[in-house]
Image (cartoon, rainbow, N blue to C red; front, side):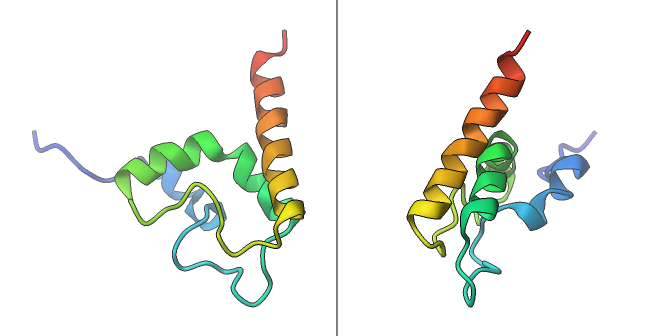
Amino acid sequence: MEKSNEAPKFLQRFEKYMPGPNSKYKNFPANFWPGFVHGFILPLTFIYSQYKPSINLYESENVGRKYNFGFVMGIIILLKALTSD
């Protein structure tokens, strides 16, 4: 049986939401909501980036504080959801 170096299909479905080199935020830099989504899906993005190195964990085309705040809030909400009883 040949080993595949392709990412699982469920991760490939999330690629359009992940930061990467072909950023869709060049004309309109990412603000709070894209930052929130990128923070929330960070674990999936990290795993997918192991299969496809062009995927970044963080969007470089962003507006700064708003994006950073959204990114951190996404991580906090994710951690809260994963650790709640």
